[in-house]
Image 1 (cartoon, rainbow, N blue to C red):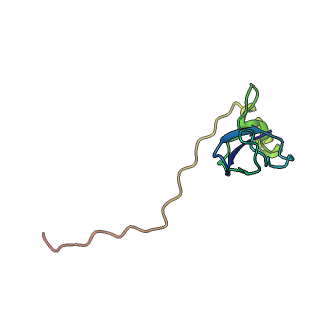
Image 2: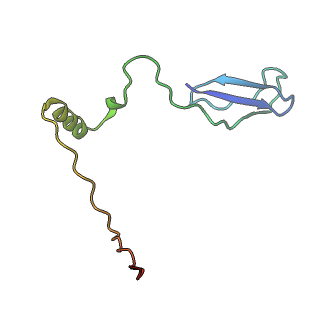
Image 3: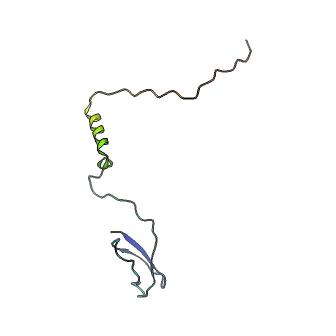
Length: 99
């Protein structure tokens, strides 16, 4: 469940409230007891994984898992292919006429 930030427009009291996403926003200020709360727009927090067992490879596609398994199972190493030649051609240096 997320934590929401609230501010009272009547007395200026600010606080955080731990609520379900399905719950309606609060309207009554806990300090002044008046109707005037506004839910503040927050940046939120990033997704946090707590505990062990969360790895980037846990959510890979089946095709990726099969390819990775076949690569790790082979004992033969392959050489990297040379980089393709550039499409721009180099021009020969201009002759200066000096001898």
